[in-house]
Amino acid sequence: MQVYSAPKAIKENSDFTFCPGCDHGIAIKIIAHLIDELNLKENTVAIASSGCSVFLYNFLDIDCLESPHGRACAVATGVKRAHKAQGNNKFVFTYQGDGDFASIGLAESMHSALRGENITAICINNTNYGMTGGQLGPTTAMGQVTTTSQNGRNKEYHGFPIRTAEQIALCEGTSFSARVALYDIKNIINAKNIIKKAFEYQNQGLGFSFVEILSSCPTNWKLSPKDSHEKIKNELTQIFPLGIFKDIKND
Amino acid sequence: MSEKELLKGNIAIAKAALNCGCTCYFGYPITPQTEIGEYLSQKMQEKNLAYVCAESEIAAINMALGAASTGAKVMTSSSSCAVSLMQEAISYACSDELPIVVVNVMRAGPGQGYIFPSQGDYNQATIGGGNGDYHTIVLSPSNVQECIDLTYKAFHLAQKYRNPVILLADGLLGQMAEPAELTENPYPQIDNSSWRLDGANSRPSRNIHSLEPNQTKLNQHIINLYKKYELIEQNECDYEEYLCQDAQVIFVAFGSLSRHVKSVCNHYRKNGIKAGLFRPKSLYPFPYKKLNELSRKTPIFIDVEMNMGQMLKDIRLAILSNAKISFIGKPTGNWLREEEIINAADNIIKEYYASI
Image 1 (cartoon, rainbow over the protein chains, first blue to last red):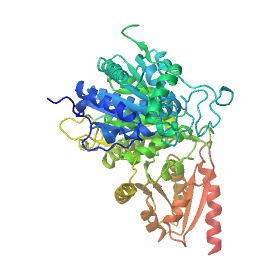
Image 2 (cartoon, one colour):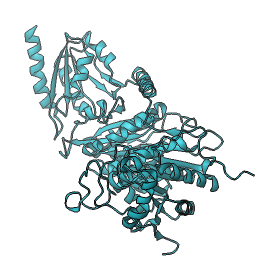
Image 3 (tube, rainbow over the protein chains, first blue to last red):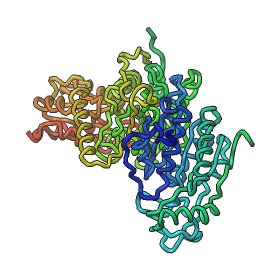
């Protein structure tokens, strides 16, 4: 009896290019499983962004378009609307980091939510700019040491981090906004159910759906993969609580 | 067959875009081109097409980038300082080989400048304001009829070469009305089924990206782009020659200003001086070869522009080294009048004949 197989939406022979212990791999695999389960492969255009998340198209066996840094939600808007103008309803989602979604691209992200753009955005929050070697980002926690906050983030000098899922929940066009983590099996299963809901809301035409994923960055945090997950469980979830912040069906 | 109607340049561009199958427009208001978005906002909604009043020009051009990946005919429009905001995505679109029509109805710069008409974005359009090795095709209309004709051509060339095309108009042309005919789009539909992103249905998945971590592949990609630009340079040079064949002096001007220069040529012809006008309609590719040929017979070239002489370097590259080249221009404001051009040109011509 076969108990496990890799998702069909994952390209064959794709090498894992992320750092050891990075949660990008788990996040992309969850998305691939959902593309299989919801039968989306033949109808989907995914938008990759800048930073570690750009490599999405190396793993997923679906149509992908790269976006300039921060503009993924605007690019997704164009893809979705252009297909709609041709009479086609395509499934369109973005895969972005926190720097991409919530710093350089905050205007594009938030306005897509305000317009109720019928797309899904997945945001990997690892509290730093990972690809460039771990600098202070929009989600860097108070006190967190990065290469550009070597004495730790402090409010007088650096200001405050953004709680992205809560902010997106405030937008009227948002159908669904949640934050999940991937530090243990229970959370991975939960994350999959939550992302599934976000995808289904797009399929039901309910508006902008958003999932922020608290993810580990062992290389830049200078922690082992195990300790990185402990940090998410014990520290980051205190600052960035897990949960659903908006669900249009329950509000 | 439609008839001539009184049309503003901006409206002519918008109507032509719709008429040749543009299904997506994304924009942000800026004078002197706002009527394009106003007109299309209504028409696109009526026809269930895509219109977004974007949160910025950066968002607008990136929406256009996304829409272009579906194979749709896509346009955005803006003016000078805001076209500056679009340069990053234009560079991406060139690398991604995505067809986007970008209309720039030029106003005065640098910075915010003002809403006076100007031709100050010649360099930005023809050299490119984004990063890396790339070219955008640049077309320059001189009257409202050409706003229609060159909009059709812009969409056609964008699709044919899978490359952004800039329609470089100016505030005067955008805002003035004259009779023009909304003719039929003369260009054929181009098949894009081999590259568009519409879901991996019964075919392998595709991806479109500019990132390339393999240097051999990145080099080859850029070399391939330049093979395409070579074809564009061979095939798509477009220009108007007015009384150039026997000319003793050739004026070079583009866009709406060239119409004043045409009157200047008529003035000189009446007064016994054989003057002609050479007007590039494609600014990239620039018609170097034709200008070079003309410089074998004509000794004096006078560049007339509403900027500080941005086209001069291209004319210098084109003409033979023994031909004389002079410049008449000012950066912005009311277009140079016929008399102003004649006063300045009289001196240039006199000086030349005194020197030989």
